[in-house]
Length: 266
Image (tube, rainbow, N blue to C red; front, side, top):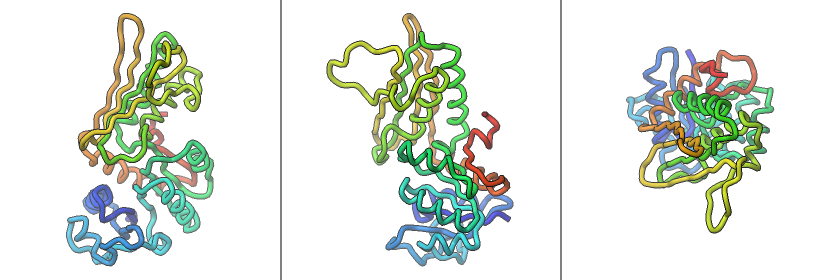
């Protein structure tokens, strides 16, 4: 039985993950976590999440939770996730990170770790990870003759831009074409910027309403364009991916993994 600890258990994503874990065979919600001072601390995690009394009080003590849990599912923010990695590593357990907003240096630091099991991916959606692979293959086939533009749309409450998934799409394109995502990506355009250069990868972020997450990669040349799009219609796709990752990561040796590993897409 995989014992799961869930951050943000009183929130929308955390509660959804808790309900899905509760429904899954071979898994159990063993701890629900929230930030210090949260008004629901001490309340029953099952009642908060909506699947019935679980006799598990909501807590803010990650270290104590990981003493009896196998894996932490962490959808918080970059700063909190980095702190939680240290706690999980010390406990010798596993962590699934669904947070975004990491700097390139923070990503590199996480990917270099060898002291615990880390599932670190920009997007938990199966379909989105297939898009990563398709975009890389399309870029390889089309080459430098096609301009590449990435457009992502999210709800008005999203705090970081471009999204982590849009950045990953840019990395896939850059890798396929021998470019540098850090220097060749153009984050929006404004004013008299001149003609588009051959090497640049355009990045555009739209924030509106309650859009869960849309990503489109445009490959355009004179006379035609190819568009590859993924649209998430519900947060459930990310939650289901996180639950699948939690079940999978506990059986892996120490190391850093992503959804592409779980899906055998590498």
